[in-house]
Image (cartoon, rainbow, N blue to C red; front, side):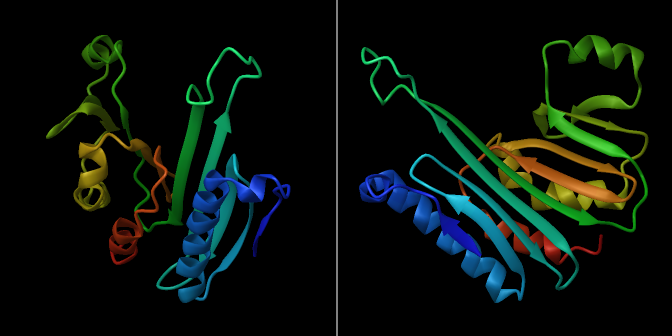
Length: 184
């Protein structure tokens, strides 16, 4: 169950209402799949956990934190926002790989590591893998819109655990649903 830890004054904020709506939509999505949810939210943040078991077990985590300065000279418009989404599941593919945003030093590393290359059709991302497995290809195809919008932070698989990390304040349930239909 997702609950509010907001003060009465916070509950009057439009940001509280936005976060409450986001959390209710998350809880509804998980409950429709006979899953379990937990979490807390207020006007400034939320931390949500969901677990579904059908068609296979997935763990979903959504986090948002808003940091503002105490200085009265700085407007509330100047705030720092951290958002994170993690989708995690067990796979039958035991190959290890990672896809992440490209760093300025990656061109040098690529010279010394043949497993390290730009992700095809997504030059803002690096793929580190010995071979392009079926899992890599299916996941890339499914999350393509998130790669294009640069909302993928990292996709990795190690010891049969697929981790998809995003930096977004959107649910993207449509893309998640497509992932659950893959034969991973």
